[in-house]
Structure formats: C-alpha cells, structure tokens
Amino acid sequence: MKDLQLVLAEPCLEQWNDMKQTDDGRYCDRCEKTILDLTDKSDAELLRFFKNKQENVCGRLLSTQLNRKLVQPSSDLRWHWLMPLAMGAAIITPAQAQNLKPLIVNADKMAASAPVSVDSVAKTSVVRDTLNGMVVDNFTGKPLTGVKVRQKHFENVLAITDSTGRFEIGTTNKDIAAPFIFELDGYSAVETSLNDNIIVKLTTVITIRLGGVSTVALDKKPLLVVYAGKDSCTIDVSRMKEIPPEWIEKLEVLKDAKAAVAVYGSKAAYGVIIIEIKEAHAKKFDFSQKN
Image (cartoon, rainbow, N blue to C red; front, side):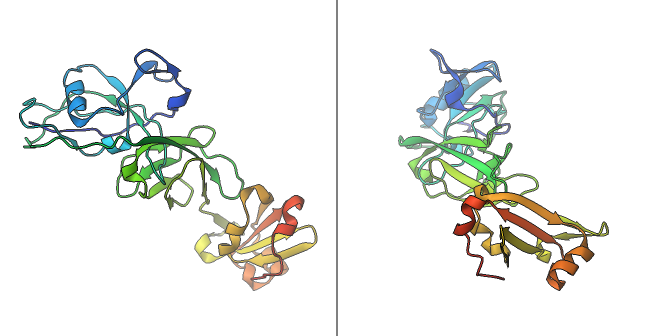
C-alpha cells in the first residue's frame, strides 16, 4: 500500500461560517465551488475518497489530518499511486487552548511514493471545535490582513487573517497545548497558544532614519516618550505592554537627530518615539515610573 499525505499549499481567505449551506457541504463564492466537509472522516475513508477522485475537489479538513501519512489496514487497497494535493482554499486560523480548526483544501493530481506496510488503522480524535480570533497592530489597534498562522515546528500555513484581521481554525483535543506562530512582513513574529476569541497583537519592526543619513533599528533603543495632557515620562520598551492599542491617541517619530538630542538629551541619539495617551485613559498609566 502506498501512502497519502494531505498538505496545505495555498490557503483561501474565505471563512467556513460565511459560506452558503448546500446539500453536499458549503458553497464558496470566491472559489465558485462546493466545499465538502471531510472532518469526520477516518484515514481509511479519506484514502477511499481520494482514490476515486480524478478531478479537483475542495474539502474542509482538520489540521490534524494534514502533514502526516494517512494509513489503513494493509489488506485493503493495494495502491500503485498516490494523490498529491494542491491545496487551494483553506480557512485560516490559530488554535490554542483546545482545538485546531478545519481547513479547506483542494485535491489535485496523483504522485507516487514508496510502499509502506501498515497493520492497523490510525485512530482519529472525535473531539472537534472551531476557534476564532483576531490579529491587530499593537500600537494602533487596527486589524492586520494577511497574517499567516502555522503550528510551531510545521511550515504549512493553517490560516490567514481576512480583511478584518480575523481568522478561524478547526482543532481536536490532541492539539490543545500546541504553540502557534503568527507572521506578517514588517512585524515581529508572535508565538502563543490559542483560545476562542483571542486577540493577538503584532508589533512593527521599527526602522528610524535620523537626519536622512543613517538607519537605526529598535535594537539601538530609541527613546520612548509617553504623555497625556501635562503628564509625561520616558519609558523602556518593555513597558509598552502596559499600553493597550485602544489607549493610544497618536504616535509620532522624531526623525531629526539634532532636534531630538536638543530636546531630550543624549538618550535621544537614536531617535524618539512619542506616544500620546487618550484623555479617557490618562489616569490608568503610571507616569511616576520614569526610565
């Protein structure tokens, strides 16, 4: 018997719950195809399903059904071929605390692989759930589109945030404690476990150009100044976690090196980031703890 491995290559931005219910599954307006729900299928059932499919098929799968060999009793189907999958529509998602969400995949042509002898059918978990979440900019609180979500130690993308920054993922109880990675160009990657309705905050990799001459990254420690009305203080970057995005009224970067040093002293040699806190939240921040 040859083995079949399902791999997600091109996730889709459509959310499963937003698709139209049909007799056979759900209809995706973006792909203009009916998506079959395969999340309750065993390994043997998946093998039989794809064995009889010669055309592309879009299906919804659990993340635990991906990136591993599907197996069945060696007395069953003696395959001389294997189906590789060109995954073309996946629901994105991070999964933390208890479950990973079903993905939409597109099965394509077949490819051979070395024979494998398997004496027992792999057991699959029946505990399933769908987790939803959102990814936002840590400073502005704005939703981030196109954030890739994958399970740590795996390269395949399991979810991508949509235009509202939201994602969803189907999971089983086997993946409850698995860490997930959130990645977007221009932002520092975040590793975290997941729970339903989680909000993940990504921080931009800030590059400051001083006087139009040199470029200084965050590891050069620009001075951070926080103020609200007449209250102000300088803080270490570690205290940024004390300022939720919704508190921020305005964020400015002082680019002129000479002007920065003239106002804030030598500590501003690598630039100044000025953060204004909204009046409604001013009393919630401790301005007495100066860096």
